[in-house]
Structures are given as C-alpha cells and as structure tokens.
Length: 123
Image (tube, rainbow, N blue to C red; front, side, top):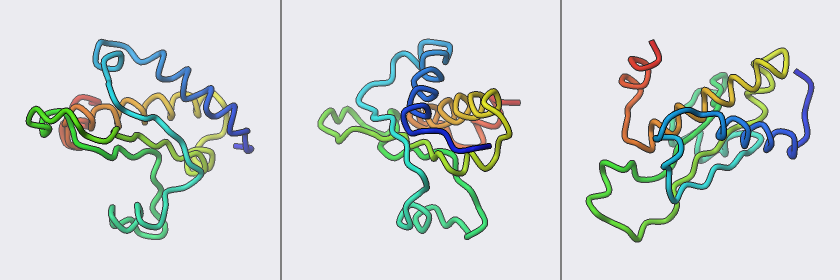
C-alpha cells in the first residue's frame, strides 16, 4: 500500500481504539499508545527478531496481574509499527483491520495474556 501521512496513521489508530468492543478496551489506564515507522534495533534484539521478521505492534510494561499492588510505575507503552503494516496490506480497509487487530493483541498483553491464550481467544 502507498505511504500515508503520520497524521492519517494516527487517526486510524484513534479510530481503531474507539471501535474496540468491551470494557477491557475502555478500561486501560496509564498506557501510552504510540506509533513508530519501525521497531528500534534494541526492540528487535530484545525480541530476538530475525532480519526478515516483521513486527506490527509491541507492548512494553508490567502486565496488570504482575503489578502486585504497585501504583508508581512508569506508563506502559503500546507501539504500532507503521511501515511493516503498510508493506502487508493492499488497501485502507485491510490496514484498518490490521491496526485494530494489533491494538487488541497488545492490549491483551497489558491484561497479562500470553500468545497462546491470545491465539486461543482469536480462534
């Protein structure tokens, strides 16, 4: 898909967040939802990504079940990666769906779900 502006991409993220159903999407707190063109080299190393592997989103923080009552934590971060998404879709409808799915996936990590549980819920 052709490149879209950062402003348009942010609007798509905002729209997707507004369209997520359920109380879990509405009750996230102290989470910055950002976007970047690509994952940083440090993020790629931490995740052990191979050069050919793409990453659409990343949750960084302390999942709710592991906070043990701590209230003075830095804000968690969900980063959506623009360029890998643009390379994976052919139109705006597909991009909107990919953003929404990725947001849901990363919010699930915020609630402490691992990949196995997320894939189980998606099935």
